[in-house]
Length: 389
Image (tube, rainbow, N blue to C red; front, top):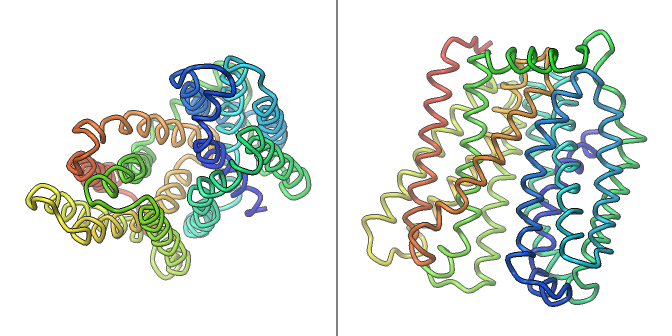
């Protein structure tokens, strides 16, 4: 069940990164412009946020399983529509539905675990999901690049269609309903407003949620800016950048593995505090190197960057579990706000880290410790009365 839910959560990075190498070919094949093709990514990301906001609260009244089955069906059909799209307008519409259903799948997978586990157990499960799902962003661009030549960009969407079929079968066979009838809320606008008020009114939930969101902001700052920093600033080749990206991803996954071993020996909040402290400290060293050294050597940037990225392995799973544990009566709504904030802030930070141009590491070096500082403040101020036992 956990592996199926991890695959469901991985559909977003797979559907985002796998087709990126084919964007130039899509422009030529569909006889359109580059901005039009780039809209396929914009609508997908918008759909991810909207899908989570709509389906998360809805699942608190209707349950998880039926909606999750529906989401995997729509994801599969949308990928098929992308593969068959005759025009860029059709592709844009199909990508919107792929994003909506992908966002629904993500929020439902997170809510399923929150229904079944609490405290350290939930932190361990979310960390395991992160380990499995963390492989997707690393594998997706490599897989997409390898497939582009033999099968073309349409073939990549057929591969995503096959992944959707696998998700549907896995959910149908291995994922039961996790929200009992007696724990569901009535539908309608009144119930939605009540659930939102319950979640947003929980100060401790907000503290952990902001810690989660700004941990992801730090990670996305790195993802958005690192291709330019590593290649343009440090002078490494595209192949060397791929190695750097893989090593940093391995560091984050390894940290998540260590986290799963330590949960139980240490409380999830202690491990979260350690992760945020590590993120802030490494980010500060990165900022110092980027702003005080002219033409910094590779190690002055890449070592603190590796530590910063690795620290996320202690942040995401623990923050998710602790946040969801605060709103057990509306796990779907709580999960929806986590996801919407996560992708919404990521969309905002993406252009900001390139504000100084492709030849500067300073914006990324500012963004990472700044995100770490907000995460630390959220953890210390908003959750300070939380019991740690």
